[in-house]
Image (cartoon, rainbow, N blue to C red; front, side, top):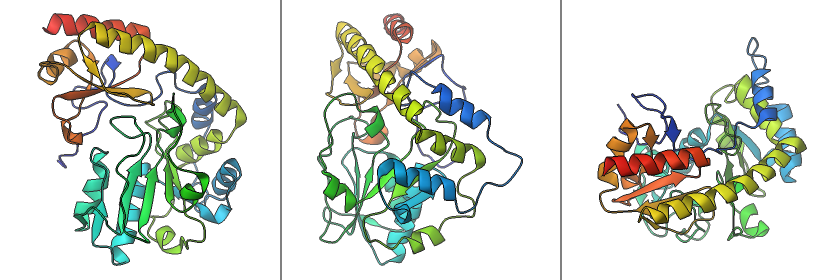
Length: 316
């Protein structure tokens, strides 16, 4: 047992109404799902991910040399941490509330948290709060990694960073959340301009992308998939308005969020999470994020929202 905390299915299996993961509740994207289902799993994929690199470079308008495929965002978090540690980095700057793998990877490599460190992590929209980045710290010349997992699921607001600022950072992208395909593993990083990626590439295993991850990333670059994603954001905005109104009616307090998820607080809420799970409704306890007494909810369809309200009333 690793002791790591994530949302989604556990020993009990998948919940009927899962608010605990931040996958796009409009998914799966039909075009991306068809691409994954049609992937050739009988053969090795291209170990160099040539087509994937070229497609992603064209999609983002960057040089192909800047694209670094990854088995998953978590794999790249651990790989970049290892690369930094081997480069002599001894300290890491972490957001106050953030995904646990940043700290887990740092502990694995003996990096000590510090305000102005040579490795700095950021996420925007942030998790669990879904807000703009407020905690970005780093020493001059630091390796800065911006996790952009939720940028495609941004429902309001705009990035705090300019294009020039992003070009000076490592940008980490994991489209499976936006496509509603979190069971398919595959991600990529965009390296800063003029950074030699050879060592980070050398630290990857052979074939970091399987056939299904490769198919998902190729589909990600297609205009039809991006059109579906844009339409899903419009739906999610409507669902979010309804869900937040329902939470307020339940007497819960809400944190502001620009993403397809938000954090709530209510008396005895976290104590009631097991009872809610027993009724098929799963929320994400925010204690592992450093927010005890809070829960994170992804935006879900109206039927799931109504099930949440009923389960909460039954649990009290």
